[in-house]
Amino acid sequence: MISFNAKSLFKPYFFKIICFFIGIFSIHAFCFAADAALKNGKLIEETKCYACHAKKSGLGNGDMIYTRTDHKVTSYSRLKTMVSVCNSELRLDLFPEDEADIVQYLNHQFYHFKNN
Image 1: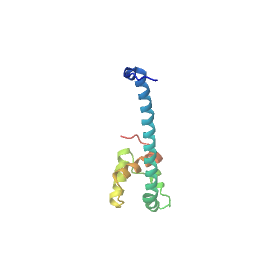
Image 2 (image 1 turned 90 degrees about the vertical axis):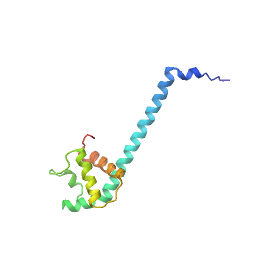
Image 3 (image 1 turned 90 degrees about the horizontal axis):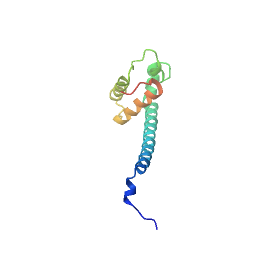
Image 4 (image 1 turned 135 degrees about the horizontal axis):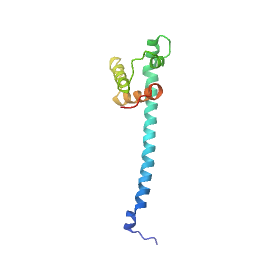
């Protein structure tokens, strides 16, 4: 029969093992959430933003608005502002979480600003 000793739970290696597994699961959960946000941002950008930007660029390519040399977005905070302006002015009815996902996707795909 295996006996259970409560004092064994307080040994340093037990805490190290627990912290290790908490860390592994936390990293996995964070990566999964970040990946889901990027996928959601891409989906929204493709369905609600791309066609308008393709028309506005005049070249039929919605990505041109992000990669042109005279782009108005010069910082992460400006990117957040522009996404918010598009949402409110065009009445896209996006939730704040959707705006954040779009910002994350656009920054990941095109801008590469440090998140501030």
